[in-house]
Image (cartoon, rainbow, N blue to C red; front, top):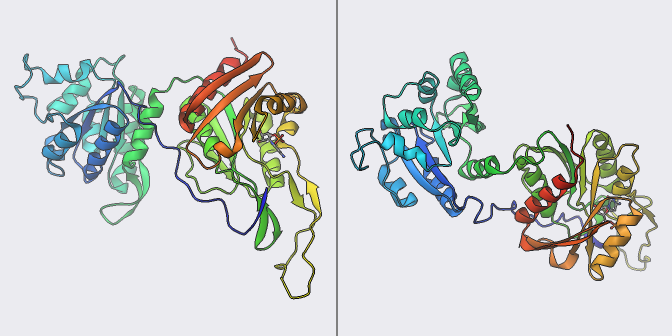
Length: 420
Ligand code: C5P
């Protein structure tokens, strides 16, 4: 642990989607008319960067907002805009488009376009392709984008509910400033959010119906109003695990120490500062959880009494001495519950990784410890893990933290008791 003036851990970016997360996926991206078409250009870039091939289809209304030229350049494929497009040899673009597609994503999805879809109308190429898609193999995802009054209208709400009942996945909408100057629900999700939602959609739902609790980041133990004890954990590994668990279908609660990371989509976040706060928040949620993953680097000690005013340095005054008291061991406390969730601990060591991990497995009485080398992971986007349990060790070689988190989620899912 290091004593620092009241700086919080360095801000850092979200665990990024790794370059290959959509590799091999072919996405039909449909644009209907709306000002959010301007975001579609970036969305194509994000999907292509994540490894997907993207075939853009535009309605006539969409062409008023963005040109096919832009989207062709970004997707590296000619754009389809008309059901009468004769480029396909059999002249059946509306059929051919979806036969190799892994999904159709409509972004933006206008109120009018969705009203058409729910009635099975097919008077132009995009709605025709949606109707003609093999419904079992080619899922439909829609990202609504419209003025807040249009979104709130009972007709729109009814139409989106019907679309969901017909099997489509509705992504968003977001809330906030709208192009019309009003503020409210109806904004299309940002390109990166839609990319992440699509990546999540394709993840196997290994933790469907499970409640997962994760602690992440450091804790900060105040010494006085401006100083404290903390450590160099960035929270990235824990946030990646929360995201991977949510993507795998779990209901996730993330108890986060002081970090500046965005909350993963669909995750319930509880912010705490000190180890005692983290302990209390965790123990409140643990009895209702199926899995607990303790990634937080909890400060081992706190000062016995926190000074009410800043401790001043002055000539001739003695250097202050602090009495420390031990913080509660959160993981051990959860493992001691009468019916504990499946508990996973982390061991960040600088040496003798496996020896220390085994010692923690026994001391904390948990079924799985994930060992990593502290100095080689703090603040970084990649890591290497060793899983240590009663039956042996398993290496997860160096990779970005999200990739490792997905592998760890699969390992945890495989160890959970099966029901039914
Ligand atoms: O040996 P150590 O206590 O550092 O073990 C680390 C593991 O225990 C991590 O999973 C960490 O999140 C958890 N831990 C905890 N509460 C503490 C200290 C560590 O939950 N006070």
